[in-house]
Image: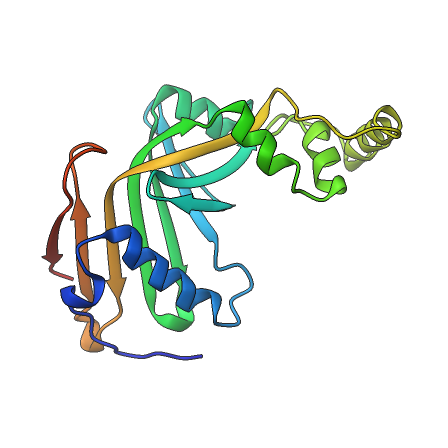
Length: 205
């Protein structure tokens, strides 16, 4: 599916950015994009910025949820500065969604609920990697995986204490639609806190 130079009007988004995101995400999911839920996650601490791609596993009106190792570099940066940026880019639709907000850990119960839905191999993998740490070779991971297979061979794989989810509660959500002659359409939803009403403004490209 290819969309070029489609103009975007505020009325198409409506007053609720979550409903607008629902429509845009559904449109992206209807394309041949391999992972429409892939998003860039930017974190920062101590005057350093880091960005990587993670998968949004679900979202609701509270925010956008992803999962990771709580001992990773991203987790260390979030602990130091919880304000993060997310970016969805759906090239074939010529669309972006930019999200800025605070990342907070979800409950262990909520993490466990999702963890139970993961394939067993992914559950075992969560136990194997001290994410972001230096390792000598791939053999270290393979050996750890075999160890975990033996350890949990006759039972369910439990939720690792160092693994779980974050929910990014947005303060800003920007919808970007590519325009002709680089005159893109940009609409920014903003609110000072999670209980406030969203304000919507068009931005210059």
